[in-house]
Image 1 (cartoon, rainbow, N blue to C red):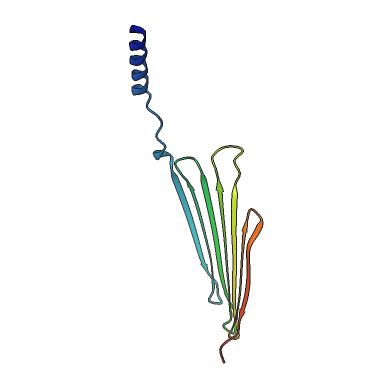
Image 2: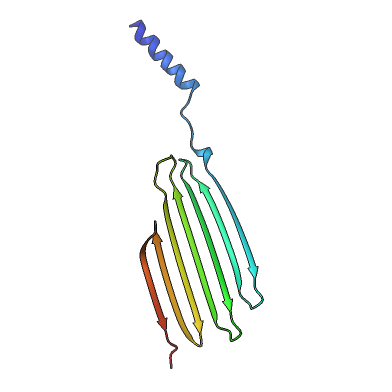
Length: 134
């Protein structure tokens, strides 16, 4: 009976002196952004974010958007977004999602394309063309 009592007391002291790790303090994030105007009235902007959650999973997101305006006022807008999730561990599989969107407005006509890739495989591919209403 004494052995059980001493074992329980030793276990209690061990747990009190070495508490379980807290994951709440390990989360972090960072971000950066850049914006540049162009002479034709358009612009280019980039944004990058990186965050690590409490369990060690890292998510990186990059976005680039450009707007180009020609001499006739026609615009082309491109937006590319890439997000990568890297689970904690050496052999865990990354997941990368890319979205590419382009909109062109020329002479009243709008052309739109959207493509989404997950780990290099296209899951969405849309192309539309809209004519102006007469």
